[in-house]
Length: 183
Image (cartoon, rainbow, N blue to C red; front, side, top):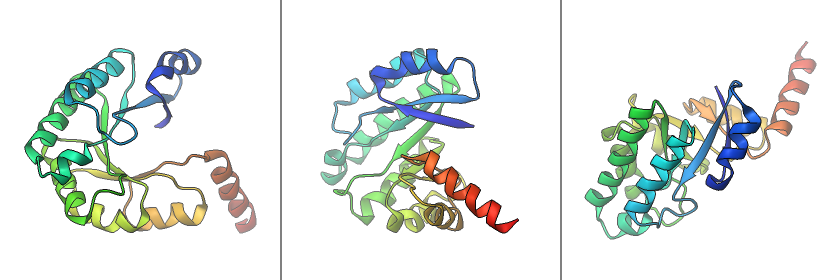
């Protein structure tokens, strides 16, 4: 299943444009740094689900993680995960914050498993092995920000179930050129 990730304010337009096609609308909760109040994030999650989004990228609060308020962060993720499960949507926990150290990344991976998130996403190739190791078989890993075919292949080799790219057209062209050259 392909998705197009849009800002929350563009969900309705994207939904009308894509119609009932095979490409689904995805959006973000708490983008870019996850610092919104939990009530705001849970409301945003439920509002996006009501508006037809079926893939949500949730950004954990780095301040809560750094100050070791893990229960607060986990409750927030539980509420979003429960809403996604009820709506038949996917929840991706995005671990893409330079403020989070290795310990915080491991804790977030474990939280993602406990709350039944579908994916953990990172755009940091250096974190892929760590994320994969701590997500186990319960949560799939997605590598975001992939720009080249070499990066896509590396992500797959490291066990990523999905990749996302800010420039999928260039990535597909590079892949097509490799396919033609191999023929």
